[in-house]
Length: 68
Image (cartoon, rainbow, N blue to C red):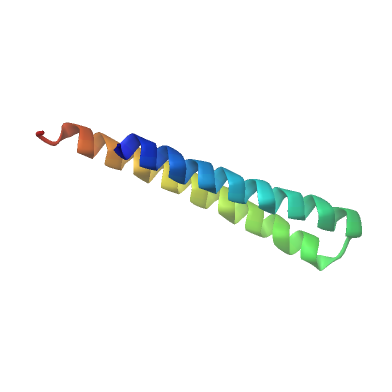
């Protein structure tokens, strides 16, 4: 069950990242400072996603080690 919740959380993060990447692509076509700002947000989001994935993996390991 914990693995399903982790997978669902990672799927939501992937969807959010896809939306950000789409917005960045649109703004790049339009030009301007907003495109640069979204590019920065994209990098921040990727770092956050990686951190969350690592922490969820550690939590999964901890939960797997608990007695049932």
